[in-house]
Length: 93
Image 1 (tube, rainbow, N blue to C red):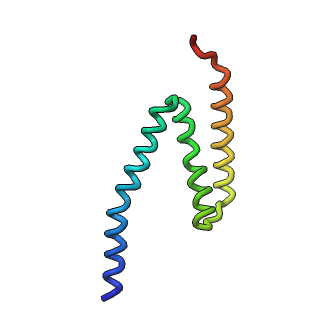
Image 2: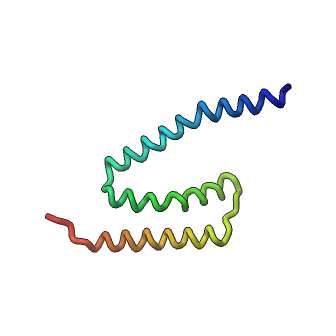
Image 3: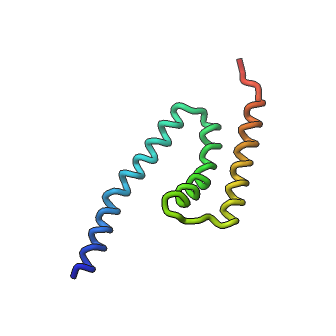
C-alpha cells in the first residue's frame, strides 16, 4: 500500500510546483526583455543549452559527452561572433 501512496504524492507535488517554476521562468524572461534590447536577448537565449548542460554537470553529476562539449563550443563561438559583429554596427544618433 505504501508503494502506491508515495508515487501519487510525488506526482501531486510535481503538478503543484511545476506551474510556479514555469511562471517564474516566463516572468524572468519578460523582465529581462523589458530591460534589454531584443537582439541581445535573442542571442543570449542561445546560451540556454550551455547553461543546462553545465548545471546538470555541477548539480546532478551528469558528465557531458564530447558531442555536448562540441555543441557548447559551437554555440559559444556563434554568440561571440554575433556580439562582436553587433558591436561594430554604428548606432543611430
